[in-house]
Length: 98
Image (cartoon, rainbow, N blue to C red):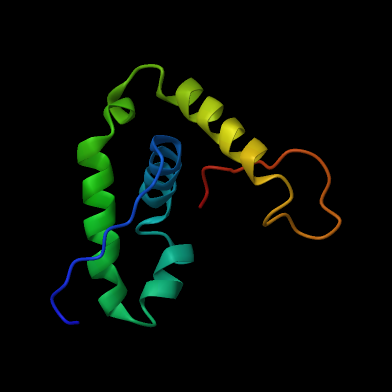
């Protein structure tokens, strides 16, 4: 099925969190280690990142940090324990360091 587009649907909250994370990790060793193993991965990453940045108005808002915090809290509540390391207690936190 070469040439057919694949449509990925994200909630607005998911899109905002993904956009923020991509912005923070592109150009860092954390992401470079992954994509340098297969340079073709840059193509979809750039496409996804570009679509997110051009679609999400919040990234330019003066209230961006508080909006992102609220969005992250909603997503974490929805996740419950999914993806939480064994023995990890309390809320998840994400630093700006990728």
